[in-house]
Image 1 (cartoon, helix red, strand yellow):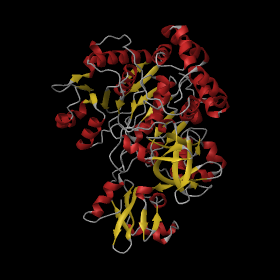
Image 2 (cartoon, one colour; image 1 turned 135 degrees about the horizontal axis):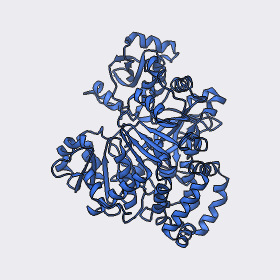
Image 3 (cartoon, rainbow, N blue to C red; image 1 turned 180 degrees about the vertical axis):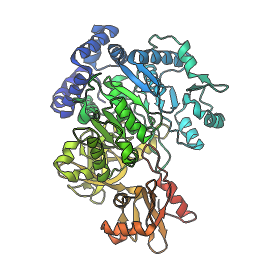
Image 4 (cartoon, rainbow, N blue to C red; image 1 turned 90 degrees about the horizontal axis):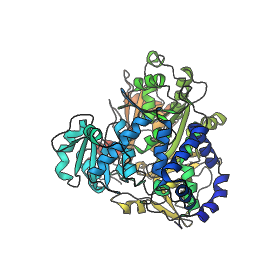
Length: 614
């Protein structure tokens, strides 16, 4: 980056001021905080920092000392408002501040210093957010460990990040004890939600014994998630440099101008505006009330809780997803914002009508769907359910993105209400720069022409996988003098800028030289009334090399035959070479609650002893 400073900031203002995303995001903050609270937050921040020093920090764009004071000021202004609801526990913003301060001091007393990593292996709960905020205040990135990892993956994830401390739910003590000798760099094991094992520390004891004053602040953005790992080993994505550059002197500057950095910053967080930030207001608390049913380790779930950490929202946390409990909480807690992956929405729609009809869902404003393909039928079904149960408008929204790119496209109700075909898209490019590139032509694709989907966003500016930076370099494509991230997806964009996904290159089936993407076949089979889920994979064929196979999971209480699936594919007008040559009916598919399906694991069963492509 050319440098933070007043002149760079002045140069950036005209461009930023002209962007819809900038204006919308600023209106979102004003709406959610309220005009009086906004003034109070800034006055408190100036008082804590020193008003002259605060002005100097803003003019020089060095916000590292301002940011922690701003965050604490926000908590103090909202004080008695509920911040976190986690099972039977309800914490106000005042409670949150106290617990975060105590945990931050406890971690520093254990010897954690800025840039030391404190990993978490936690079920959803208040401890996740307390750890996130505490680590952010003291400058410690927090790797988000997926509790679905097997032992070898867990060892790899912990060792590659050089974690010095590990905060874990008590349920995971046996798993951690089994690998403790293989992760010698972890000096402190902190157990939440139950008694600690020998050689481990109690989270609750640390909170109880630590002072509740502000810890020695060295602010970073502690976000440190992993990729899904569906096509390889999960990689740890470093967010604290890209997102955190504006707020921390510990971050590595991206090599772009301040104006370009700020443009991508506003683009990325504008999803809060597009998804209703200027409209949502609970009639009682006047804020966003966010349900968090997905695993907090998942990067996509960040969309569920950003309004809570930035806008004074209330976060309602589900330890584990349950479809009926999800509906119950929407009614009980007056939820108006939720992020769910397609699998969750499918399970909700599959509930018996008498169960779905028990709940008043009229408070809902925004149901965000992402992380895996969602069929148009699923999107319509979600709107129908919520309208039937009290909503006066369509609620289904969607975004496309990845752990590396953040949000890129956004699909809103007015989009598909104007043109129903847009239900098939993942929305218009609004939160990043995304284009479609033809490798064959070495040129950007024309509208409706398939190619590789490339993105340039806030989080790709200096993309880095912790412990494997060379993999990030391999994912970048240098085109027209700029780096673009290629996550292996194929698709096309229409003349209005709406993106349509075709499939993932690594999942492509090559049958006798013809390329087949599973998405189209899966979407067709999911339209069968008895089918809950399906995975279309590569299946070995002596003549053609590989052919499409469909592994089908029926809905509970239903059965379906292989012949029925094949005949249904024909009625759906799939071309002959796309009709599965092999169909297997199974009781369950290995799809995680975060929406990711490990197709390679499914394929392995059929390719044992046979050499396959890729």
